[in-house]
Amino acid sequence: MLNIPYQRVGIESTPDWPKIEYDYISTTKGQWFAMDLRIGVSLDAGPCGISAGYMMSNHDVYSQYRHLSYKGNSFKGFYPHKPFMQGAYISLSYNL
Image 1 (tube, rainbow, N blue to C red):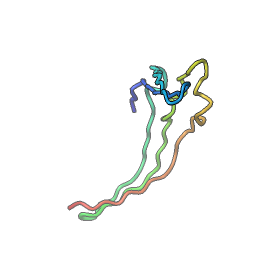
Image 2 (cartoon, rainbow, N blue to C red):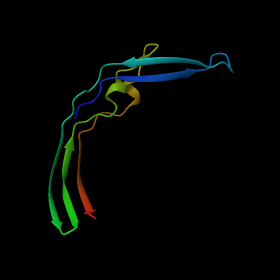
Image 3 (spheres, helix red, strand yellow):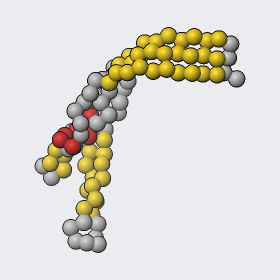
């Protein structure tokens, strides 16, 4: 998988209520490439089909957010550690 390595976040602050101020921060750092592997079997019987398998991925959905910082405070500690994702899947289909 290829990701666009860019993230922009808007931060709202209210130092003088009801006046609202907005600051925008962005980053071009983070994971831009991720492996996604799926292995499975598929069986079709007429219009019906079933498939099952196993998947693994190192995709990190919070990668860009961890590289953001605002007024010296890093966002890295607010997001969970990157897990190695794995699991099983099953799919049923019916073709008209």
